[in-house]
Length: 435
Image (cartoon, one colour):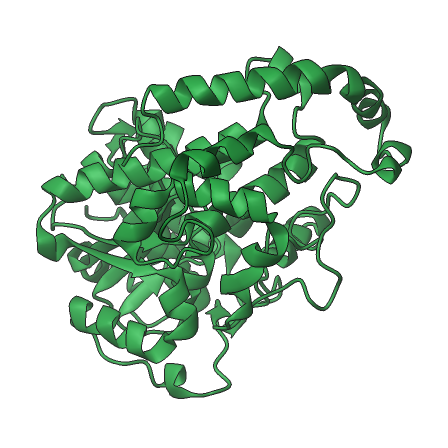
């Protein structure tokens, strides 16, 4: 696309050169399902000269696919409105209000890191707003080019655009769309111990939604059982990615365990860089290495942190301040689930996700040789953590809606407890959790 004279005056003179470089770069999708640490992963490449990422932006490609509704392109004006208003690109193009600064801090980012927001807006309006139709990939490339120019990032060595996405449903169209990209896109499949996935999702959303059985979500048809939603999210995302990988070119996808990144950091990153064919980033060799976001130290995020999910009146307690952020490779983040799952919950999850755990090489604690898988599955008949809140949960409320939720919970709990188990048995019989 050749820029008009007014557009050339409005944006940097090297925009067209940057377009050419970004247009040659390969889209590299970091895809997880549930909670495999994609925020941590993409920030490892924040300063790598051959890999460009926008650490503040996730799920943009998938959101654009949904807007396109099955078409190869979408209206450029609709894409621009989505980015400027709904997607988390809006955090980068909007002026840093107290609310936006708080969101940066929530995600462990420094809101004062250098970023020319006006320049980013002008680049996006020039590259997208002047078009009638755009593809999701063209929008991604425009955002990455604009971000690089707005942060002063050199482009001459960039070979990959690292895009953060997630798959949480078998109906996701993200991976089939990735296969059609040209030049051919590559995928790093991020995985994590399903026991850790479940406990992270349950903890955040039991607290965020107010209870294990949020009545308003049930009444609005959004699903009123938090623990089943967490199980399905973990299972269906894994099934969708596994089915896609079965038909993908072996050289197109690489599986990376979150535990390996934390426990065998340099060894795992060498495997990744060799697969990509890019150089080693010397910062990774330092024993004091900390991932960065826009060049500034990243503070990390955690589902158990009040800084990330500030719902402190929920049924499950958050970690105390000072112990609630993990921003560098460490063992603790791989073992949190052991402290937050009841022994019977561990047994149940190991039986439910046995095939996935064996395939990914995870160690069993309860489902060892000689122990009955059926008996482990029956543990779900017993109460889960967060299902029977302590007394003080009923006495602390944030609003009148929260008070009403807690007053009605004793009435909701008995039928919800029974119906959720029956619903789980039906889902299990239908094969919802099979490999």
